[in-house]
Image 1 (cartoon, rainbow, N blue to C red):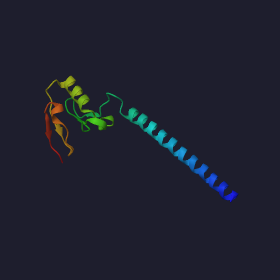
Image 2: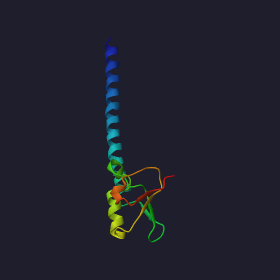
Image 3: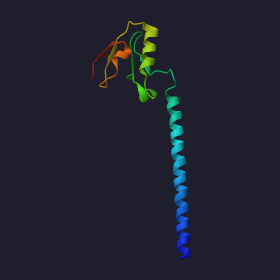
Image 4: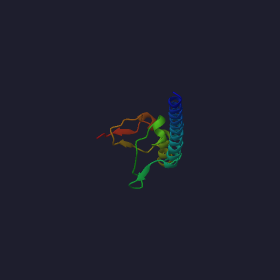
Length: 112
């Protein structure tokens, strides 16, 4: 009976350590993933590549939480209007819709 309690206590201690370690691991993963997201897409760095001086491609502009990893639609509008005033047109080549009014209604859907 004393051996049984000793085994149970040891087993409880092992599970306690594993549980504590799992919590630390998850916390570290969360902290690390936040740092990675910040380093991959620093504030103000849009994913834009120029084809010519006036034609460029970019990932789909987004709103909300997705904007942490993709082009925030407000920053896209700021970028475009700073360079081209209101003389621009956006061609949406993907099937993912987005708020066209946020880009002054100058969006043509050409979804694949």
